[in-house]
Length: 365
Ligand SMILES: *Cc1c(COP(=O)(O)O)cnc(C)c1O
Image (cartoon, rainbow, N blue to C red):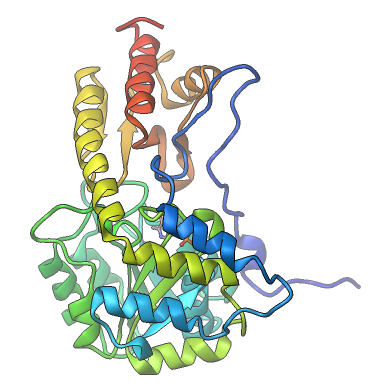
């Protein structure tokens, strides 16, 4: 006799984070985890440090200061906001509250891997829906809905593809879902998107009973180490998740830093400007090398390699790693011959592209 985990748990392949090591003596350019090259706003760092003056005190279990700052900046009612230990925690809480063994939850073919992990952890069935041109396909998602479906996860924009659905497509998706299915709009990269037809989901959440939007401080705000996410949703859903979460799920440094970070709109704008400029430059430069780049609206690009031996993604990855450029392998996302590259500093972008040029025999090593 020995303990056996619940059904589904052993079907999970543990999430593999982006690598972060370069060989000794080589400058490291970590472009594997979609972290910002610009760090966090100074006020956010200072607030985090100040919050550590009293580590003996429990943090505010309601994260009041952070909710208030989010509500002010986004024009929301704090009662519709729930903060999480990263948005990953919120995705898990949604599965905990709305999935039981035997239920189904939908994610897209190349969708963020955390969905599948959390669905399986509940003993529920992940239903992967085909994408079209590496983009979520509303008709295919709607066709996959059954009477067992409880959740639909849509990363918009998606990681690792960088593609997005225009907001009228998101509305069409919502309009086709039964009222008892929760539509989860994961907008981790919303701040980076510069498209007139994009919406993170605030209006839809405000006008529906079965839509939530998740956001994170890990990407443009540069606070990944502190683990801060938030969810905007109907009161009934927020109330359910609030009952299940850990009573002190955000630590004191996270609450203080998040509140300071979200109020610094100038910092966010600068980071978005930097990204827009280098996203375009990097896409063009990689395309000029003859690589195929999936058009991205996020802070990363999915780069596809030729099948030719000597030029594959795995070989490129080895070549780059030896020179200090850490990109992300995405075989686990259904792209065995692609790498995901995060947009970095000017120097990182230029040197990574030059290294890829050398790998392909089109430039100096
Ligand atoms: C990075 C990312 C998140 C953020 O996760 P945190 O737990 O907030 O760090 C969520 N969704 C997607 C699609 C991401 O790429």
